Image (cartoon, rainbow, N blue to C red; front, side):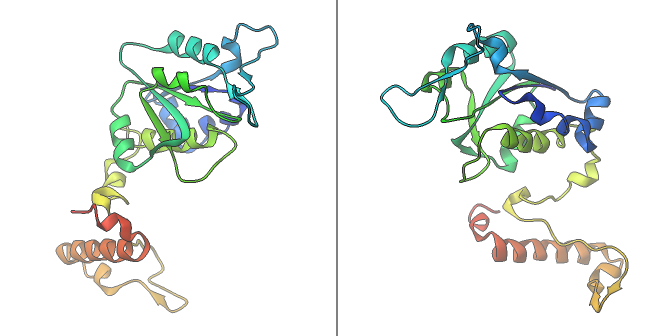
Length: 223
């Protein structure tokens, strides 16, 4: 997979692509990430990419032309273009799975007061990571990329992807490691039994319990 990111602040991605699983995925040629400065696509000598909103109001709005130029220069036949925006569809694991199967993604990060509405005419999907406002789309784009990349075949072990949170709209079950007894808090006996059928049943019941406790909204969609 190739991911091209369009941003006004390319330096924000320096550490993101040089650490942990993302770094290994790049080194193993599982993923290619290219960071592009939107200002490189403007026709103005002063590198202007935004202007005042027509009709008045505060803030600045990202202009059509540099973004159209950027997307058109990068787009291929199999490209999916994503816009990071608070007004987009809420990002969920199902969307991550779908996007992980794509060959080429362009992720557009907004800033300031947002985008000229006409930019949406060349966007395939608008994504939000939650009902709150950030200063720009860079951090949300990293969240989306991290979620997608870890699902690409070979990036992490298949065992690590089994029965994760939000699969079947249930949260993950609780996990434990040594020591068995820490400050009086003991690992549940059933996990020490070696009876895999009972362990799986216990874990499924725990997923339902935790989802009911922390995210009851998910149970309405769960099987």
